[in-house]
Length: 168
Image 1 (cartoon, rainbow, N blue to C red):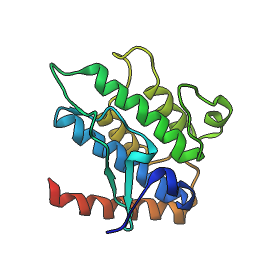
Image 2: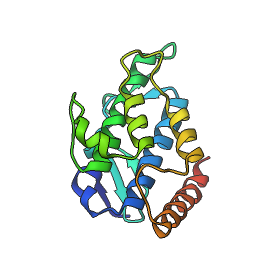
Image 3: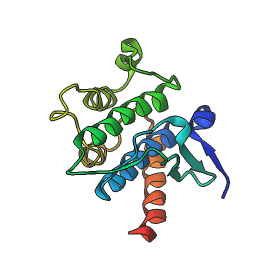
């Protein structure tokens, strides 16, 4: 397979593909955290995408084994995921500041998702398990989609789930 990173290729993806990427990242991070590993360096350049549209995480050199449920490390990953969602939906990278006017242009679910990743109180910040559940329960409604685009999202996510079924 040929891989490119998210930073280099974001402009090439359709809305449906962007939603699928967000879901894949959340689901992958849910798995990584379930293995008691904290990535620590989630960044668009560390998200690799195969020519089939399946993501892989790279740059685990700073990853850490969770010691006594390292909540701070997990929550850093969640914060970085909020930045990734912002980047995937807008094509603009943010570092330590939210571009309020762009976030407000997002669908309500996307706004709430990003805001829940940035909550200062770590006890209140969301988790990847919750993120995955909310995305599924709300039919991945992160962007206004046509019926055709929505069907493409479901098809892409179904393809992704079949690909990862081999690993579980």
